[in-house]
Amino acid sequence: MKYVMMGCILLAVLMGCRADHTEKEGTRLTVPVTNVIDGDTFKVEINGKEETIRVLLIDTPETHHPKLGVQPYGQAAAAFTKKSLNGKKVTLELAVNGERDAYGRRLAYVFVDGKSLEEQLLRRGLARLAYVYEPNTNHLQAYKKAEDYARKRKLNIWSTKGYAESDGFHPEVIQGYNSSPGKENRGFDPDDKGNCQGKIKGNITHSGDKIYHLSSDPYYFDTVAERCFNSKKEARIAGFRAVK
Image (cartoon, rainbow, N blue to C red; front, side, top):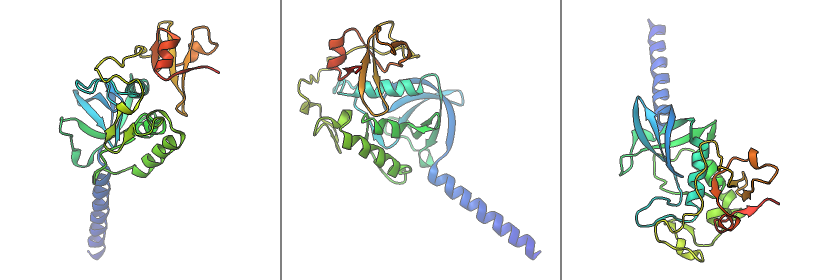
């Protein structure tokens, strides 16, 4: 009887530890992506119902805001997230206790093809660390390291001093920026396979370099576009350079 009681106690302790571990990390779900809205927001199907996911601990520049319009690098962030998630299943690590934001969106850490979406956006300088609140601070150190990598190299949102700050993005510091909604739209989105209908392809490398490829370039058809352009001038205005 003594050993039975000890076994029960041990089992209870193990179960208790497992519950604590799960509560701290949040529930994990692997679900299909149905639509990408912007760099940090997308839709998935959970149990036959479409849900909007807001990626935890990061913020990307706006692309659809009714007042702010399209902010610099917002389209690049959205294009990267579309390229990463479209047509795929993602693993969501839901916020502790299944928390949602003020808009009813589910909050989650996001993993695709075994990689953190947050880390990839931060490392490319397409997102900043933001909205860091306990108890949802998992992976924070890895995210800080990824953001530091982009900061030191002045990639994208960090290329202009004062643009990305702790209180958000400040497009007014970027010369020539027009804050009117839609005025900052340059180019168009590629299809789900990253093709541009023969137009110029804009690609963002792993190191954050923004390079455009003409249809006459040797690697054009192997390049997966994150943005498409009708002219070289349009690509340059959007911050892309020619292949060296």
